[in-house]
Amino acid sequence: MVYETILKAMGVYDIKEASDGIVGYREFAMNKYDLVIMSYQLPRKSGLDVLADMKATRLSARIIILTAENDKRTVMNCINAGADYFIQKDLSVKELKAKLKEVFNKIL
Image 1 (spheres, rainbow, N blue to C red):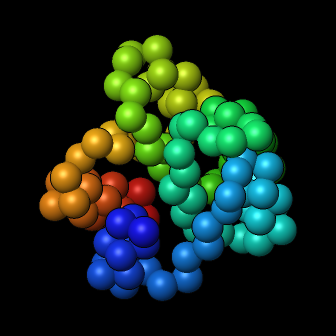
Image 2 (cartoon, rainbow, N blue to C red):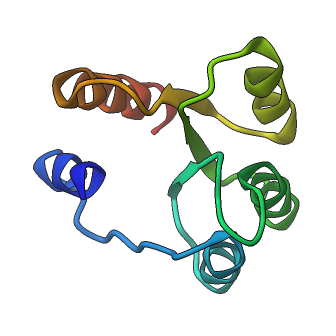
Image 3 (cartoon, one colour):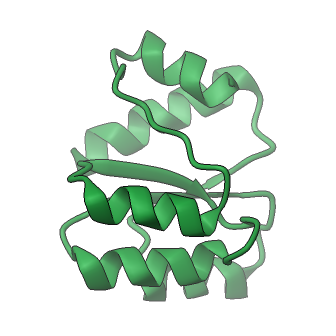
């Protein structure tokens, strides 16, 4: 809900949400999204696996990974799988909004 509120305040209104990694990938594969913001920790299928599947399906997709983990291995796994950017989940709303604006300016 926080992410949706921030994105709408930034002018992003076409937002789809998936309940798990399988549903998220299915939605992605059936539509042409410019940007995906997804969690590293997903039910039913890991975020890393979904990320790899998305990039295999459409290499040009811009994907931002959200995670509470900040270890070098997790970051490198996401980057190697094709993540365009990596954002910590435990940021304050103000910090998250600033980070999303920064990321959007870099990748869009």
